[in-house]
Amino acid sequence: MPMRIARLSQLETQPSLGVTLPDGRRLFLVSVHGVVSAFVNRCPHQQVPLNWDDASFLEAGGELIQCGVHGALFLPETGECVFGPCQGRFLEPLPISVDAEGNIHLASE
Image (cartoon, rainbow, N blue to C red; front, top):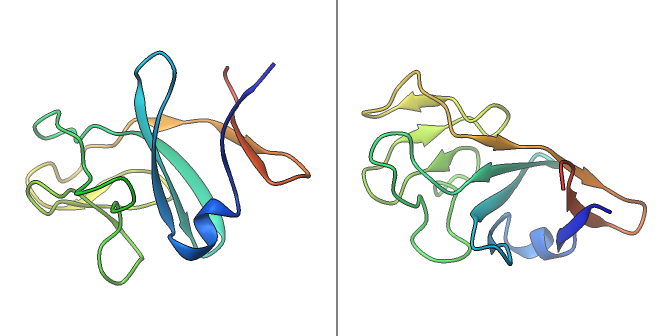
């Protein structure tokens, strides 16, 4: 059975959210233009978490994912770094699904 990791309603007021799974894995969700994406919370540059706090994964304009350590910017659709020291590299995506009740699940769980 898929593991519920969040609800769409959690992304309505704050468009990004950090999640720690029961096994200790850290991931994050972002909602940009109504599209929700999930990634492992690890920058490909220095292998550190991207966020400043549990809900700060997007740059001020809310369009791009931003690393809190060195400011690298990533496309929310693909996780590709488009600015910064890891340009051309990618965040690790996680497949998710959303059910009719607005529950977000890890698709591979």
